[in-house]
Image 1 (cartoon, rainbow, N blue to C red):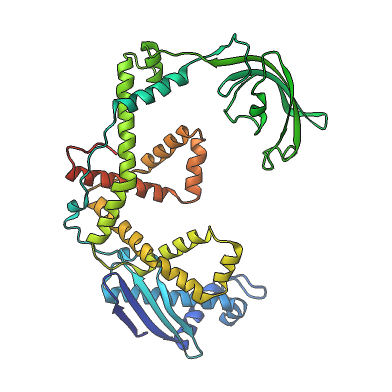
Image 2: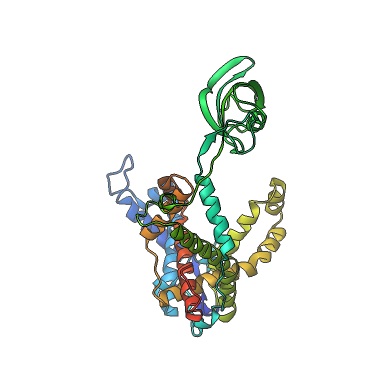
Length: 438
């Protein structure tokens, strides 16, 4: 039996230490070798009858690793029992503070961390009071005007003028490089709005001033990162014929246009468009206030109000994450300087420690409060949110969801949604008259 020493470092961290003699380690190795000998097939020996010394000679390094791993597991199990800590309270991976192997023994010291207990008394006090943002009639009118103008049709002009910014042109074009046409570089009666940025930089600019019926050769250069590698970076000539110039007509906000703007609602009216636009602007302003002011204030207030010991291993993980994030903005030379200078790297880690501790602390508080107030977000809700956002950004929803799954980002999305629901509820406690769904 190995003597072990346990020590409570604080309310979230404990140490477990022991010196394991070489004799005990060899005994573990022999036991594992004997068990392996019953399963291995080795030429010259019957299955299940491979001698221990043969197994050790062939797999000695692996057996030693397995024996040491078994000793560590047993050490952890015994230590947790002596400390009276349930295994389901252990969080993260243990930290090896010492692992020294000599001819006489194996000297091990492990630090384990547990989920902290948090006294949530007074959590209701952290939500700040705020005034609901107001939306003026002028803001509503300006937004509605923009929506209506966007629906106005393009109408062929009769005036004898050249192409201007914002016009819709109807053109034929054919592109060539050194006189040789290239695939995909030709179209007839193509509609191109000037200023849309739809074509290669410089193309739309050179259409300005052209009149209907005019022909022109436009010279542009494909971007160096153009998706078609055979065209990237090459100077190109386009023969262009301008058939029509169309300018924005006028649109009137009537019941028919209101129905279109409101997604086909049968009882749509111009008044309802104004009401819906006002509600949308109200929501945008409240969301901006929440994200830029209220949410940071609540996070800061939570961190300041509650005091408890943090799991050291989780703090170290967060420090790793923040250091890696900083490394994304470093040059190769900077990264190498940290790799080659342990003291410099330690200094960098210490510089982010306070922020890392605050981040870990906030995460534990939010998680504890969410459980106490029974705030939950299902996996289905996370997927639905990602699906909707992908659709709004004209991305493939399934590909977006698969990307988040592959990169293990779904837990962070869920935590963010839980956090927002929690803070919305806390704001509601202190701002019942002002609060709306954020």
